[in-house]
Length: 387
Image (tube, rainbow, N blue to C red; front, side):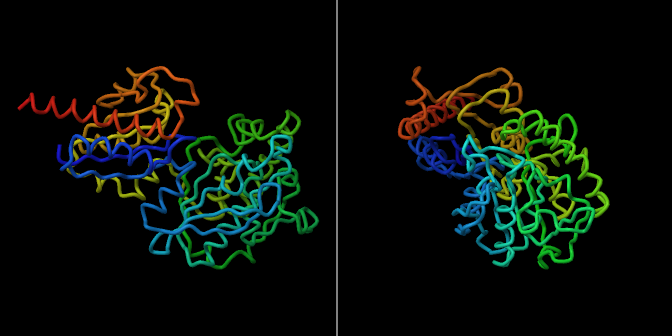
């Protein structure tokens, strides 16, 4: 084998995509010291997306303070590509559920205002292209808090600004009847938004943002009923002011309806996270002439086949008839994974261990190195035998 590509997702709570990839590379190098080894950090649009894109584009991290879902000022960050044109924003980094203590989780009160602040800062930095990762939100404000930070204004029936100086949150959505776009950030008209969106839920309805996700964010049944009514109401208002009907658009319900707001008002393109990342990384070009691709994640099972990193890597690789081997901490549904097209599926664990040991970074790094080396030995032997 002359060229081996490594595109492995993070092992959550253990190793980043970069660290996991380097561990696998060390194993390949042990047996194939003269091979061309290409390590590509990768993610599926959720946690880790920002770091992957910063690394891939030789970009930089911008650290700043913005408002959390409960409007508490805190330090956060986003990325800018090396050419300074594209901002990489994970909305969960400032509007995410982990930022709200369990006892205070309430989607009636949380806001996505902070995400809008990150977009606004990136506009000031000169960015006109945006890649935004949705997922893990603490909010059900239909993205109106985000829009508010960008200069959109929302008014009630009497023409009074909803919330006054306070940010929009779930409890205020039903009051919105008019939207004023006259004060929005001037650079938005020249900006392009691409959104990593891995859920297909519509904006509202039985499978919409509220019914599907609000209970996870602290909503009781009364809150769900109220929020759903507000989302149904907003569909009509948004249609009136944007000309777009987002009610049933797949992905519009992502991040408490932020997907719909981005689609309607910022003309965003919603894409599956792994597809977006592979495009941004020019994956199809970088794997040309590869003899083998090694991918993986912490746990490989049926969920892997629902659009996670290994499946995206597999589909792109199959277009060029490059064999793909999947490495994971634990394995389920091996037959289904093989049928999907993986040449082999290997657990990196040498023996049964408890969870604490399994996610130990040193232990995992060594297991990845060892397993990758053994895979290369096996495949090289088979290639030699054929000749």
